[in-house]
Image (cartoon, rainbow, N blue to C red; front, side):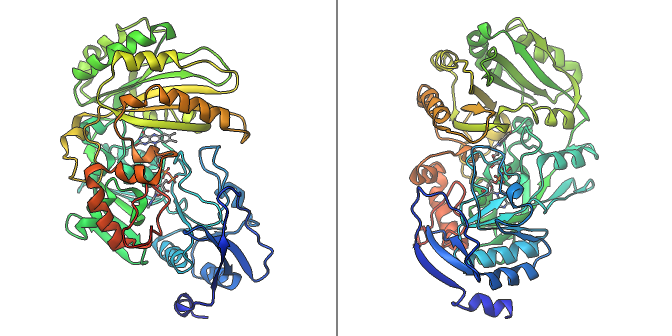
Length: 500
Ligand SMILES: Cc1cc2nc3c(=O)[nH]c(=O)nc-3n(C[C@H](O)[C@H](O)[C@H](O)COP(=O)(O)OP(=O)(O)OC[C@H]3O[C@@H](n4cnc5c(N)ncnc54)[C@H](O)[C@@H]3O)c2cc1C
């Protein structure tokens, strides 16, 4: 059957029942001519195998069903706590594949997840029983050193982007761990080592190519579809699948001064109380994130700073001296380092790479009461680690108006994250979750709103309100480009046209 005719046909789909929310989905591939799946509404449905085969024949990439080779690897997210099983995974090689997958998902009203780097801590890049549009094969970076722009394919990782841009002595600000996806990080905002100097990732986004829920290819920039351009800069994956990002680039000498400086944990309170004053006097080319960490296994607690100074090397000693003198360092790894090496330096050690449960919120002030609560509640534990860290904002981020893009939290000085981490498999996670919630309970009152990319276990209403004064405008744009809420596995903006 011709695929366009097929998508118009109502015969391929039949609603069956509502899936109880507590039941883990196990895709039943024994239905002969059909596979069982889940709709966005939560109802179960059946999709004809012939339709899946039709889709397969229209793709350059692969379709993975639960019994396919590669399915077990492809379904996994970075957070080992996430254990979901999509009914089918469509591995997209190009924008054409993405269009096919979006049309298929819309036709069957499937619960739809979009995966880039798989880092989303809440596992929004996957789903139980729906379709995963897997962008991991859609990789590539093209730098135009004359125009100072980079075109980055929608499934690329930060490391590839950084390395290619640095090959030309150029950079665009991105996140701090190189295997994070450009897709999720950018669409939610994009905090990182150079954001105080050059703004968020979204502040450097010139344009996107995007397949919206109707399956149409659109370009969004200041000139074309400006409403969509505004919305994707902080509104997450709510509006479609971005197949290509175009970023503005800046010159960056190959080496920055950066790394880790560690102090005895007994100095944690003094250091965290010193830190706000240090930030106050900091130039935009300096970035320092304090971390307090109780590693899994109950080994000694640590306090350290992750630093990146991207200013003139001759000034580095002066800029770093107050930090070095704030305590008695037990390890001082601050040195001249290639930017790409620094960007990879936390890849293996970032505690967020284990099983993890996190809560986060933006802060405008780090009071001594907040510091006391953070330090006093970080208990060592034999099975579980705990941590808290501040990711620095301010600088150029705060000089953009809160309604200039969909990212509204321009007021924030820091993003505070607390969480528990564990290295064992997927066992009973409730003690870890409880620990984080208790820890978070002692500091949440000091925060205001949260980073959409860290959203974990918040109510749909709270998620939507978190767009602050931009919510209403985002709902109107959602109504226009995704009125049935096909793209709902994100920090979701619910359309007001009945698709919620
Ligand atoms: C170890 C670690 C380090 C981190 N460091 C930082 C940091 O320094 N700065 C920072 O800002 N954040 C950071 N984060 C948070 C990060 O921004 C989010 O986890 C983000 O969701 C990751 O994007 P991803 O593409 O890897 O995620 P995925 O799980 O693949 O996708 C998450 C969501 O993004 C959307 N999405 C992804 N790609 C596309 C696309 N091409 N088109 C449309 N929608 C898309 C989808 O809605 C999807 O559900 C970090 C997270 C981890 C785990």
